Amino acid sequence: MGARPRKEMQFVIIMAVPAKVIQLMDKSGAKGVRRVRCKIILENSSHERTILRNVMGPVRLGDILMISEAEMEAASIIE
Figure 1: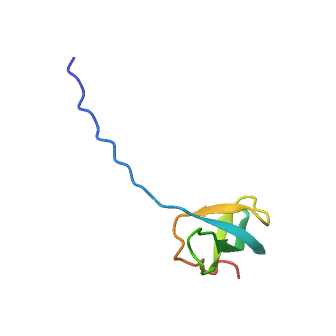
Figure 2: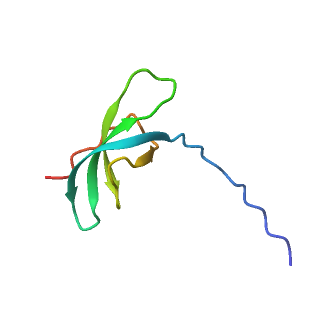
């Protein structure tokens, strides 16, 4: 039997930004999607920024979330 060709491993590096949950807002759906307000935590930034995000699963005030796309705000899925 011949040797199989090796597959190349491709890695994608996603820079995640830490954000602290400062407010729990709405909850909807059977999966427990929750809308939270987060404050971006950056060491070298004097500008404080807060964004809205949709979070699946359990979340509490003070939790740290690793956000992969810190520029996007959450769309309103809760009506």
